[in-house]
Image 1: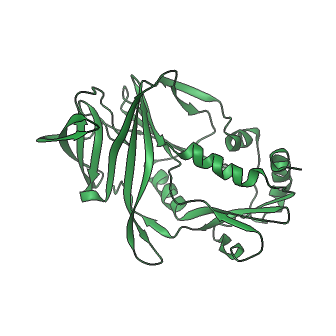
Image 2: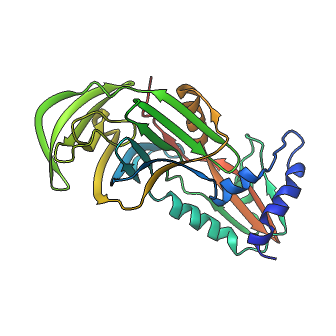
Length: 299
């Protein structure tokens, strides 16, 4: 019997045998979450998409070496709303599902102890694979009419939402110019939640949008350097959108403050999802992320 037909049944039957101190209830909504079939709330019609390289300085905690990690992010924006998300997430998710999709799984175990590290399975017989530390699971929506930013983060078993009122950054214009993707850009600077931002925006793209939580300049923000290069965003492509909607999953989100959301994200970055398969048994849990990350927001 293949994984696709057996997964939900074995998952449901095994949740009560994981550990005595934890209990997981598998609902239809959870199943839809895992399969990506949650219903959508349509917010706006997407008009343009800007693709960014987001680079950040990280540290290998085992060696102390400092390096840069680059992820490809997308900003879809329409008349009133935008969504900023990991452009490669769907591809990585499909690769992850493919790794287990062909397995003949008869038993499914999930390690739910937050202190447990799956690394002990690394040297045992079978297949052991760990998710890449690259990538971003959160999505950030902006409602420019209300100056509202909505951050959501969804995993198979939980969903968090943070709604904050956020006015545009207090941008200061400078005479410096730069060309990005062939568009002439002007420089503006701002201090935002503990860090210094240098942004280049193009008046030729007259939308007050930008990557992440940045917005409010009289043109699309195409490049940003944060704290002398600790973080950076740079547009690598622009495209028109047709029949694309800006939408959000309808889910039972746990509402939280910005500080709670930041702590959740920080704790989550310390771990990577690991899987071990042997003799029909798939065991899933967390292992330590060898990389340490900086927070964009310090306040």
